[in-house]
Length: 399
Image (cartoon, rainbow, N blue to C red; front, side, top):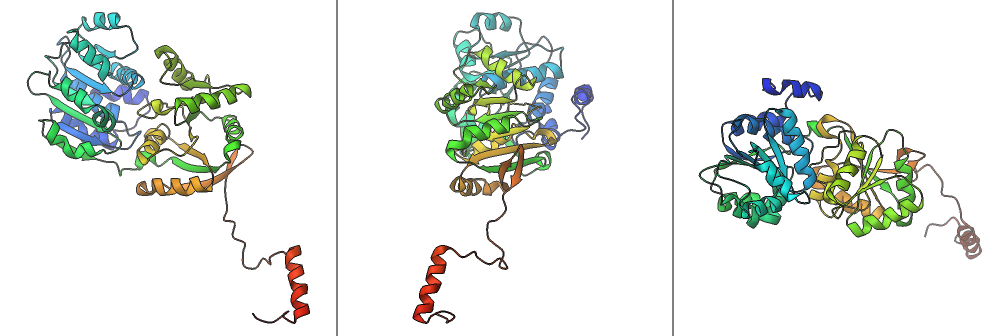
């Protein structure tokens, strides 16, 4: 399928040569009003996949006709910016927590055609009768695995307020148990388009395991942060862990920024913008940045510890090496952690390269088994044993 005429300029400006497989597969079904569950690798262009056909279905000046649910403020803003660029003539607005409610209500009075938002704030505005749902014909649930698994009751309560039939688009990079029960929870006939095994847009991503003792991780991170032409996103398991090691890095006078869920909206936006504009080469965060964030300049994802599960590893890894770009994922830990991570990623057939840091280069760790031709060097204990065997008449005899 060729790039639709309306979006050719956008693709040229962003140096995209063609539609990705998921964009080509879902374009016509969504444009024709069908409901789908779309599964595709991280970084394969899912925002454009649902954004292009959605914008073609709405009418300018027709009120809110498209609703996109996102799991985080950052993703809602990112998606809004993409859709505004795709079609500047339409009014696309974001409704998120942490923003000024009165200002949002004033913007909603201007009758945007598409609204992107977080479920909590949208539900709140609906309850206050400030958000009209009567003209919505398409609902997109991005990162559907987490939104439906964690907030199914809230999502269904919101959708139950919609009038008449509407199209439902579910998008995710990873599967979830809820996907096998969609017919139980939603009235739509939902067809599945599964392209998770399509690895062509992830071919440039390398996965490394950097052998590191726990008490050396801060030193190693400093060295990784000073490699030339590298933009690093470091994941910690919790805010407590993040701020503990951020204090260590600050004491060592290492320049970095922090992105945490507890930060105000503007500070979070500034942290991401600093990384995008290369004001910083080191951003420390939790899994608030693991899903969906598009950071084109990001070269390196660093896991301070092993992720808790495969889904977490996949989404973190998806922040780099997107849309055919090169990228690297580096996990820090010991030999036990290496074996555990190998087992974790095995279902995805991810090849882990065990490495060490030499200067500012990642160097492969060779097998430590000595070649058969190399004679083992005698220790003092060996020499004592040999003298003892001579005295007993054992030397040179098979035992």
